[in-house]
Length: 313
Image 1 (cartoon, rainbow, N blue to C red):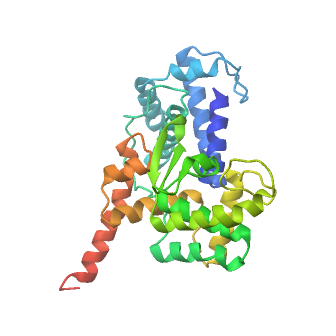
Image 2 (cartoon, rainbow, N blue to C red):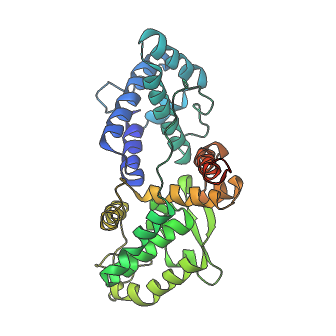
Image 3 (spheres, helix red, strand yellow):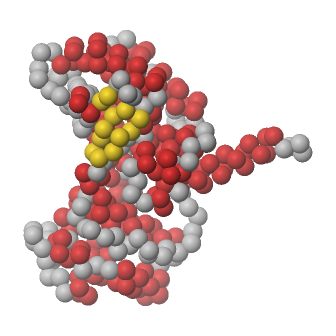
């Protein structure tokens, strides 16, 4: 059962840029749950040292159901005496982990989908303002290099579509249709979707493909859209590092990751009048519940506009 936990933590690092304290907490939370669950599901594949026997771990996770998860939450609150905020974090770790397992195709159903968490203050997704986004997108062109042209296309595409960084780095030339203004990408669990681009993003990408990419390719044979200076496909970690660098150059003090641009895309789309269902489709969310978190951000925006425009303001 520990192998899947390690895969999940690796995903948080490269895909979400999870801070080390969060990763450590999630690791401890999930290991604590495994120690609680194993005696109850009769799964003898783990010995507590993080090295479960291969081939049996999936079977162990398939035995987890909502009843067991609810029993665990009750155990945390009543027997362990955790505060609601701590219990809620542990529940959040389980929910995030099981969502990952379903998205990856390891589990068919999510046993934590209806798991109830203690009510505490909710942490909203971090996003950039439109002004901050503009500053970030202004940075690559200042370098005046083919790499800068590539990075501008990369950032424009992330912001224009809300792609996950793994979807960005896995793009091949055949996935990009500039004439009709869309890209085809494979999301979590190998689910394919079409994502449409704003014409400005299409123009930037066309410029990169026509001028900068051939220079980076340097005679090599690679179908990847985004290449490094050796003509090889960019990695997720490289994109993560590049965005950090451009944010610093742009004077953006927020600790951002590629996923911040995904959150910014969704938030700005909703504030611009897009429907929640439309944004769900563009982001490739399997559940509307995942997308609904952004409504809190748009509600906050409506309140701000109300305060500024009210006659008594």
